[in-house]
Image 1: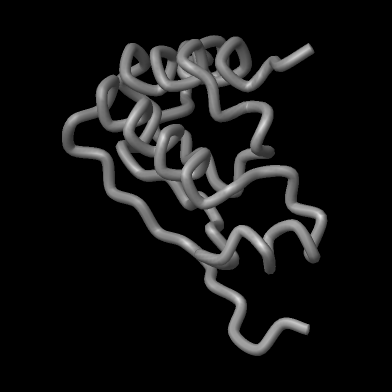
Image 2: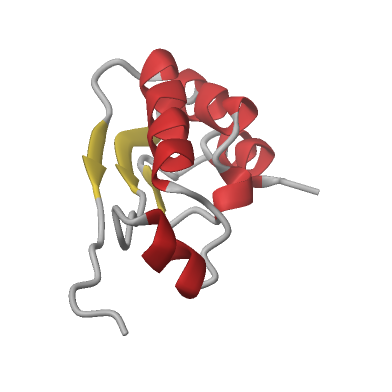
Length: 97
């Protein structure tokens, strides 16, 4: 059961915690409730490190990533619908295999 949205919302309310950064989310956690929690919790940074790893669906399948380039872009667009000024960083693997 995905819990990142709940953890972000609750973690952002802990006294003394001023900033929460959410990096390298598992693909299953890239969901509307997670993005809503990021947008609705002032302590959560408007930054997401979301690894693409490859723009090739064939390479992503060979890497057993469980998503396609199109799905990656859909999830990223969903994140930006919730957080307009979202800063995104990524990883790209060159030379696989």
